[in-house]
Amino acid sequence: MQLTRADPGHRSSQMRGPLPVHLQISEMLIREIAAGRLADGTRLPTEREMAANLGIAVGTLRRALADLTEKGLLDRIQGSGNYVRARNDLLGVYAFFRLERIGGGGLPTAYVLSVDRLPKPADLPEFGSAGEAHRIRRLRRLDDEPAAVEEIWLDASRAERLDSDDLSESLYLHYRLALGFSIARAEDHIAVSPVPDWAPADLKPLPGTVVGFIERIAWAGDGASVEYSRTWFDPGAARYISRFR
Image 1 (cartoon, one colour):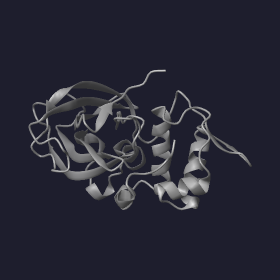
Image 2 (cartoon, one colour):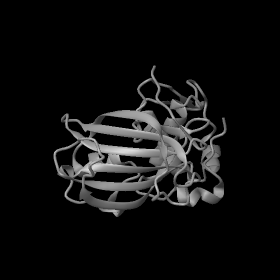
Image 3 (cartoon, helix red, strand yellow):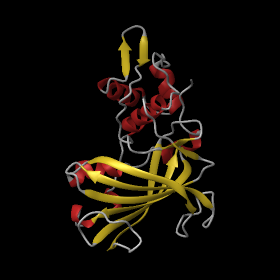
Image 4 (tube, one colour):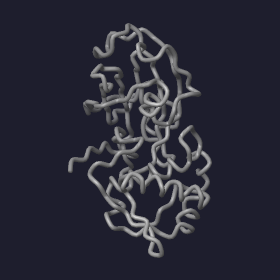
């Protein structure tokens, strides 16, 4: 398959955010492998071709390929090329992110709409030990196409405050690097629900439209439930995917 980013006119917006560009490329390729769009043994295009198609420098691409090699997902054979090594235990920054484009894969990005510390509403399930939580509302894109809005509640016992400027594209990466804990497991409940009234106009389904809906409770490595989230996704742009191998 030919590896390209979204429309070249959108490249600058896809490259923004705290996740380094080479990791964005690495994560995109991991999701392509997970989706089966890059099969085991696939020979990738030459580095110059890939870099040109992706709109990045060759040096940046080589850092991405080195990351994949370290993860055991790429064989780099001198004089022959780079070959995909598909594995069952694909681990990346977005390992817990289950939304993919209709055809599979897609690089997730996130735009923070608001961050507030609030008392936990009565309609939230029980999680964490504090009476307050940080509410994070975000717009999610896949390859720069608006795909979902999400509302994440992080128990206030895990952070005194959160600043939107500090949040990573991957909250779970931010939890690990900045807050000192990792998400070890999560439980998802899938249903349908109307798009909330705070959703931005970027999301195609209008507020009130019934769309796909994900509720999640996540637990830290110490066994404590630390986060509750709900996601409304556009079924015309994304699918919820969970793979078992």
